[in-house]
Every structure is written in structure tokens, then in C-alpha cells.
Length: 179
Image (cartoon, rainbow, N blue to C red):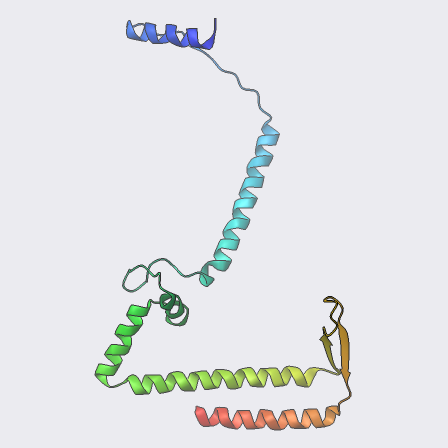
């Protein structure tokens, strides 16, 4: 008797109010293999969650955290990375600042913060340049597309260190004047 016939007979017995024939299925499985697969899935899920958490801050959400509107415009993305809200919320904030007369002060503080950031970047690049013991550049100037040439510069490192110290002092004076 086939499976179809058994199902028909079981349905018929149910319709007549009888209890159908019971079937018992016995599955044979490798418990060690199943446990190994379960552990592998857990490890894979944990790695996936770690990657997700690591990139969570770099992604823009679909909805603004303040006004709960959908963020789909290019300006929304820019404002999200700058201020953690959408463009419309930023317009509202700037409008309130203009009404209260504090916008110019706020804008000036943003300009000063950008200048300080640029100065810190310059100081860091000068510090890194000071640490090198020889100046070399790798350049691809041949038309073959894959070979590179090393260009070495003969420099007076004492004068480089002296000039970089002077530049760092100058940048520090500018930074102090902005604070």
C-alpha cells in the first residue's frame, strides 16, 4: 500500500469518527554531527553579529532619531554624519538659533572648530614627517603600468627638524590664539 492510499484511508476513518491508523517514524541521525553543525552555526552567527555591530555606527538609519521622518535625501545623509539627525531637523535648529540671535555665534564656533581640526591634522603630519630617517617616494612613471621606481632624496635632517619645530611652534601659537 502506498502513502496516498494510507492518507485516503486515514481521512476516511476520521470522517467516520474513527481514529486513524497511527504511524511511528524513527529517524536515525548522527548526534555528534548535529552538535558540531549547531556549534558552527553559533560561531558563524556570533561573527556576523560582531561585524554588524562594528559597522553599525557607519550606517545611516532609515528614520531620523528626532522627528522620526524617513531620511532618503542626500542632505539627510550629510546631516546625519555631522549632527545625528536629518536635514529638516538641522534647518529647524538653525532657524531657532537665528530667531534667538545666536546663529552667528554658533557659526563662528563651527569655523573655529574646523580651523582647530585642520591645525591638529597639520601638526600630526609634521610630527610623522619628523620621525622618518630617510625620504623615499615610490612612483609609477613607466608606461608599462605595473613597475615602480624608488626616488631617494638627499636631505639635511637637522634643518628639516629645525624647520618642523618652527612650524609646530607657529601652529601652536595659532591654535592658542583660536582657543
